[in-house]
Length: 445
Image: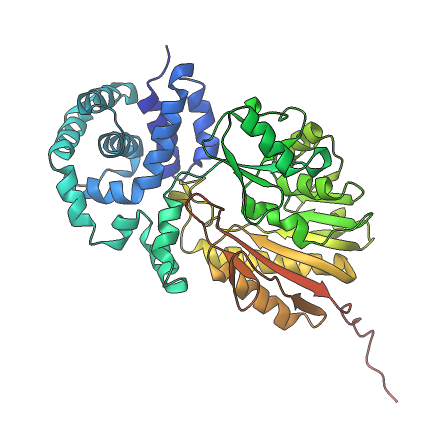
């Protein structure tokens, strides 16, 4: 028997709340259990509840006499899904309450039906008034975990509320036109002829943003590799690297391969080595390369363990798309609000520094390294680059001029934009000298 979409969404969200999974890993298995016609609703309930969870959780705290026990994250998730339906969807209240309460039996916790029913009915009566009270709390108003709301306010005092609003918006569907198969203008004309409204992105020369998202497999030329899905901010990497024919290029931390493919679309003669931590993460990279009929050397390895994968021949270009908090792409992955913790940021900054230190020796003198993250936090961005430059005498920063983003002490930050690009960061470094050779021993005389 097919699973109710509310139950499927709650089970996926419950795994996230319990710290056992992300929505990206938990939701697909649940989508397989619902009727095909209900998959869109299931996805909307899971993602929407995660998007507004910081606000919904505070509301639930006002409605409950005591918080849920750790063993009842499934009930907590189901209640949040119910609250989301009441406050953020057009689902009739009687259906939202009745169907949600009906899911309690499937959790084998029938004794909680009365509680869930009472809380949802009170939310129906008092929810708007209680939310109005919560508006005084910036964490509730912005629907961001308190640590992140405070960090954004501290780093971006003039922009933090706009960043939060962008994080809470639905992301646009942005495409990258494959310049090997025609111009962006030609593709825009083809979309117009097909009745698909779209516009050119302002910063990426290959970017096209659709007015309304659609099934990408229905787009003209998608199966033939003429177009791919990629946010505009991520598309800037290829041209920032100033590619030339025949260069040896390293794409470190490459999955899912969007930038790997864009490099080769921009300059097909590149010799690209693409590294990521696990073989499973390279599956999508292979699929993307195959659809676009491109070729790169793929390596499953820790990029820091250079001795395990590098052949000793220097690279002329390195793209380091470093692991990060992903706070610039929350609108695409709203469960980041639930899975990311304040203590993660310093650990990620340390990892980013380790990657820079490990990969720098593989870059030839005169070569360029482009450091990128999808984080909005300077701790992972300009501060990481400042520390690296301070300890690396042979490294110099190259300027990244506008018109996009905000110039930082080091690099350039793009902040997430409603109906525009994601949050992203770039810094561009050139190697002016090799590291000095280590002394072989003291000279005496």
